[in-house]
Image 1 (cartoon, one colour):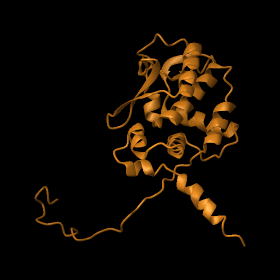
Image 2 (image 1 turned 120 degrees about the vertical axis):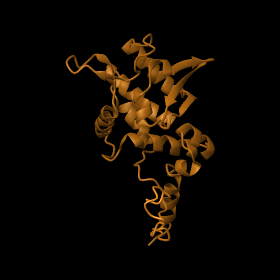
Image 3 (image 1 turned 90 degrees about the vertical axis):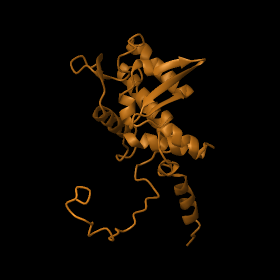
Image 4 (image 1 turned 45 degrees about the vertical axis):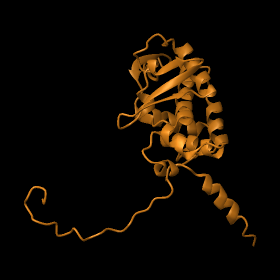
Length: 219
């Protein structure tokens, strides 16, 4: 109203709300063993199993948001030198290119071979299942809801907590990366964050330290 010259001054200008500080994210996180358990529990004798494993691995190994994963096209998985890379289109028009982890490369290659879509460069990388055939893939991309549903289904089958969601793999990847000597600055770039403080919300290493300290209370 001040900007529109309806009022000369803002009467609430001096009012300050309570300070809100977030130091720990609320996203449920898997440890490395649970993530491996989930990937290994998927039946990869079917094209759907190969697709689902590749999707979950992409979220784990690249820290990608689910929106960037479902937006991937076949051409976004490309060879550069001797390695294969992924081109992720994150929010705020950010484009992140990073080499594929050797496990992720193997999973995507196996899926592309079974789906026979490598030559369809402009087509979506991860595709919906044909509702009638239940075996074949369509030319339509998966949605975030489809990925959320497969995460819930696969997590339940693997005996993992019900709270696991798509964002869990982003947090799991970042925490595991940092635990194995990765830097927060590099994790920030890989995750597409503007600030390392945001990336730090996904770092759950302190939780293990806190548990060790609590167990010192021997009563």
